Length: 266
Image 1 (cartoon, rainbow, N blue to C red):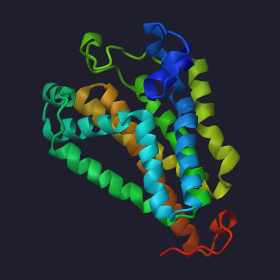
Image 2 (image 1 turned 90 degrees about the vertical axis):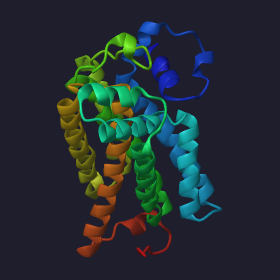
Image 3 (image 1 turned 180 degrees about the vertical axis):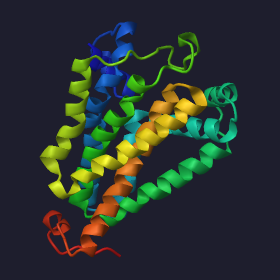
């Protein structure tokens, strides 16, 4: 039941039609966030691969991004915009929380989203098959990283002040292990060992974000969770590009395994 609640909460697909889910279940959705990454990341990767058969990778990548935005209802992007507005415009804990709760987007949020998508678009330089795998692996792993906010920090607001009117419960040991497996398994199964160090970049981003939230808010909010996921994912993509370029500098070219013709960066 908690798994169904997670799919209802983190996507806009009509899972709610399957059966009614008790409100209590939504307090336990975060441990299954990486599992929903198998769905959202799979849809994004599948859209990228299908459109990439008939369109340039750059255009297919944009369509894939739009596909995930539609599936999630821009849930995480809304969180990132509110996070940037709050931490950019607020100087105190109370002011930051007030700005983040405001439904209107501010200049920090707009500019931040522009730069976020501009950086995201740089992934178009990778081979299609390799990019599809990165998309799937990154979605799952970075949702696991971001999900650890509920284990590392307390909730910064009262439950009645929450936008979603729910405060997530911390993970049990079994839930933590399950979330870890769901997040890391795609890496083990799909990516070459040379790319496994890319898992460290989201972890570093998470640690920095966690320290920032602890210092400013003494906790986390739902917006912080969404922002953490997208920023961890961005760190993963940038880290993957760094690794590819570093390997290329040492004459290690494993990208040709993912394309039918030699691939060269422009």
